[in-house]
Length: 253
Ligand code: PGA
Image (cartoon, rainbow, N blue to C red; front, side, top):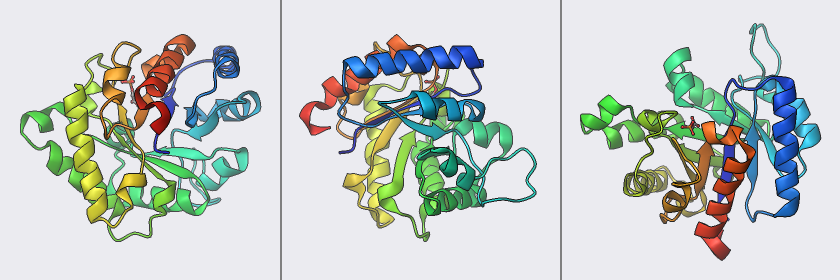
């Protein structure tokens, strides 16, 4: 089963708001079972509460640092995330690349360490608007894949890819289903080159997924699910997106 839906809450919500959203997701999840994993990635401070409250969803972290313990002020280790009950972690999100300077070697260390601790990694790749306009989309995707995955002992069954064009994140301008499919097919082919069982790896699309565009995106053959930012903060919207995934993938999910 390749289908998967993940929520990236980013740096949002106070405790009471997060609790309300978790309870609402639980209510919706009790009413309707989804035939694929749903992963909720809140701020670190809400992880324990998410773990305690969520019955039908998995809990993931938005970031983590390699290692168990160490003198890394402000960081939370992959091992600590695992201990807390996280089973997923996002690595390489464009906001981490852009605002925190994360790139190649560090991202590779994060992927490998997270997997060594037992976490499934959602590794994000995506081009900027300028790169797309310059015709560099596929080159950028290939570089972001290779610098982290080539030659490394990746546990492929613990890897999920997310294609997130930077120009589509938080902008309200989603990639068209055709643009998403083209990028996803390219990523799947490169995964094959890297020795991965490419047909088994979930490829998520992320970037302004909303209830009204989700089904068209998820209907593409190589779009296996989504990584949802803004719309994941509204329970009804996020659930409508889950329903769209269920409808698009049907029994094959
Ligand atoms: P968005 O964010 O859905 O708000 O565009 C997606 C993401 O950054 O993961």
